[in-house]
Image 1 (cartoon, rainbow, N blue to C red):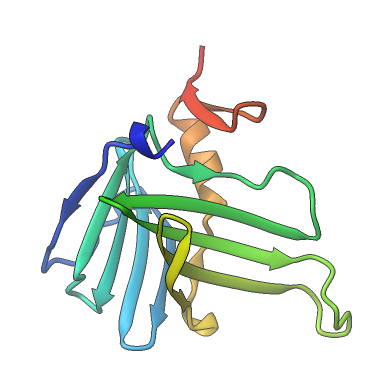
Image 2: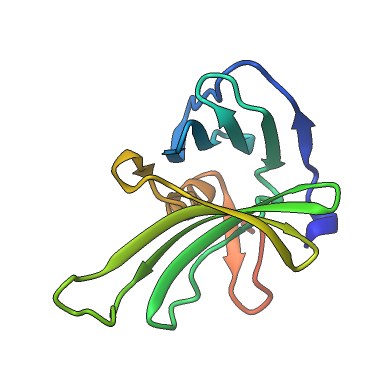
Length: 159
């Protein structure tokens, strides 16, 4: 799937612009993670607040988004952004059946940085700063004419 992703990479001093949809935004210490979507692309921005160090984009017809398949005790959705041989994997995960049932479901929003399958870093969102959820991409993609094939786990234009 990585080879199918046409990824635009740029270093930018402007904050990510979310004209249609803020998929996920949060603070991670002094840094800011923003994933935005519009009718043409899904954009990842990470870095100091107001001045991201890295911006990556996936076109809508190769979104890099994998929705939860509907099984397991954890509900998760993930979107990958690839920069050469490094993948930035942004996810929202909710444990439906936590070990401490009195605590209730627990949610994690984070970005994992991978080189091949090796984890280079993981950055978790400060929970009280989270806006949105990666699962918002499903409705956004379908509203823009994209269909997900669960068998092949791929997105394509709807017939």
